[in-house]
Amino acid sequence: MSARAEILAALRAQSLAPAPLPALSGDWIAYPDLPEQFERALGRAAGSLVRATRAGLSAALAALPAVQQGQRRCSLVPELRGNQDPPGEPQAFRDLDVLIVPAEFGVAESGAVWLGERVAAVRAGLFLTQHLVLVLARENLVAHLHQAYERLGASAGRTGYGCFMCGPSKTADIEQALVVGAHGPRSLAVVLWE
Image (cartoon, rainbow, N blue to C red; front, top):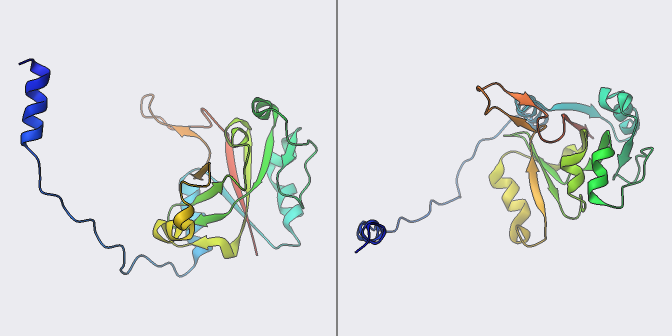
């Protein structure tokens, strides 16, 4: 018997009794102010939050430093205009300074925002643009991931692409020094409107 076969046989002999999954019903964390918690969590992830009203959405976007400094801006939010049309080829998103995308919902516990296939059909733009701005309605905040997955329901994993994004890209694998914007958007801002 080879060493590989011996190791696998020993592992098979160590089988554990199956453990039941925990019940997901119960008292989960509740936040008295979801937008406040969302802002704190997003800030810890190196993202930023801007609050706006529906009528002041354009002004709030225009006030963002990334939008002010960005030469090439594209918006996937119908009522907000960029100065560039969405690129035809996914790799062309790398030439954008700012991409404005609608978010489906946000998670106050972690500061994460859900972006699904319906919202961001061209997912390359989420990772190739220099600065990402997500537009989120306040009413679409949930407290924690349990509520987020309840909201996704049976469609989770069946509707194509979808991801939670929390802040800009970052890495800390080199000498444990945090580098923001290392391999994706250099900044991420969420415009939370009421």
